[in-house]
Amino acid sequence: MTVLPLDGVRVIELATWVAAPSATAIMADLGADVVKVEPPAGDAWRYPGMIVPGGRWSTAFELDNRGKRSVVVDLAHEGGSALVKRLCASADIFVTNLTASRQRLFGLTAADVHQVAPRVVHASLTAYGLEGPDAERAGFDNAAFWARTGIMGIVGQPDCPPGMFRGGQGDHTAGLALFGACLAALRARDRSGQGQVVDASLFAAGLWTIGSDYSRSLINGQQPEFRDRSAAVNPLANTYRCADGRWLALVMPQSDRYWPALCRAVEHPEWEAHPDYATLDQRRINGIALTSALDAVIGARALEEWRPILDGAGLIWEPMSTVPEVLQDPQAEVTHRFVDVEAKDGRRFRTVNTPFAIAGADMDVRSSAPDLGADTADVLAECGIDADEAAAIAASGALG
Image 1 (cartoon, helix red, strand yellow):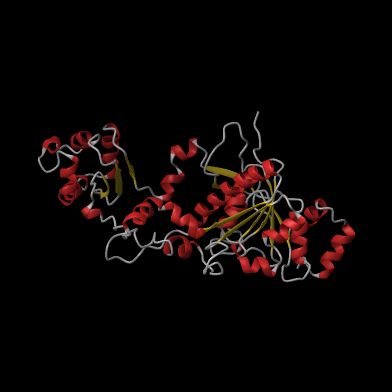
Image 2: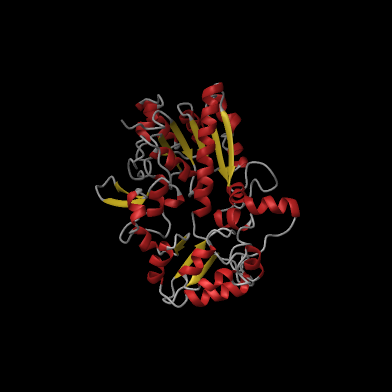
């Protein structure tokens, strides 16, 4: 028998773009009833450049908003924020990416919401958090997660321009943090009976991802060094280009465990006892020379030639895959990393699955993303707003 882990949990999401909506998309996958509150024009992420030919259908929006319902509320209208609070009165979790000042402007701070929904988990995901000198500073993941945290400054090669990271990486990392925090807060709420407050940010999530670097810098106060591949401290954890131009990554720790097997795999058994390479310390001292030697050896064969050799030697390595290759990866298929979704118009498409599994849990993507405002009438009725009141609210302009 399968279960829906979050069945019976209602989430009100007042958030746009990627980070916060990605957290609630996972909640929807786990069975939560997620109501997405959108402005009259809709979440801006509905209409980015990543659309299929011939339509205004965003695959990116689908990814982070599947399984939700959509309600349109105009916060610029005086009755808009009051309506959002009425929705929160029926909810377990309220998620927003409004900054602290905008929460105050619309009367949607934790204190405001707890007046009408004292048991709700009030969760914010912003660029830099709800406090501090930059609490009101706008920032997407390339700014707050990658650049401001220092990640962009230590990834890449020396004397090269910093790389621009793929959109959504930092957002989804912060979204996972928000997802976990909301569930922990919900557990605390259930035990105490008191509403909880969650404050997550892109900045905090970025710092956590390179916490190993910061844990050292907090002690020595120094900037972490670039990991220059040509001068690797550990040549057994480095990238190498094959004869066909493809790259592979050796990823073995600084130990002697894999050294003999690597020497045999690259057909240089004499390296095992070579005075420059025989010990871990010697490989560190002579890392430039060893990296150069491995460049020459690995560069003499194509990637497909190296696959059986490196696998047969029991080494830890992976090819630098292309996206089309990953789409056909048997490991991704067996572990259901990509799933089929049926859209409301009957068309089917594939999307990326939730990044974990729970034994015995039904974690299917339940539906495609909602059409803008498609569920407004149903949700208002579920919150005790009858047809006459709903009509009056609509006439007032609070629904846009």
